[in-house]
Length: 147
Image (cartoon, rainbow, N blue to C red):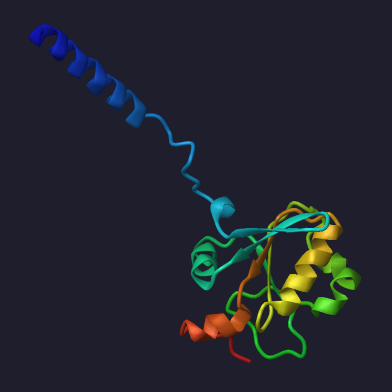
């Protein structure tokens, strides 16, 4: 009986050790698992929190676009300002690759959500939107770029 129990313990230990050496299928080392997926006509975009955007900015691999009008300031590291209601007229300023990662924001999130929906309809597939906009950013005590 003890021999059987010993073999069982050895087998379970070996199985656990083998499993722990396998890369996790659930771990995501990029920002792909970040944010809440929002379904809209033509596809999806992701709503992200201030904390998620802060983390993404540590290894910035995206275009950061302010869509707010009238202009009231930029987040640090903003690449472009394109009015939300002129986004389709300014596609030449966006990456030609519609799979390129683009993060949109405005003051509260309303205008950037409209821009995100429009870009999704046009075939953009890697869009992100700051939920709460730069109001949420400021509420978190984070600095804006110099105006």
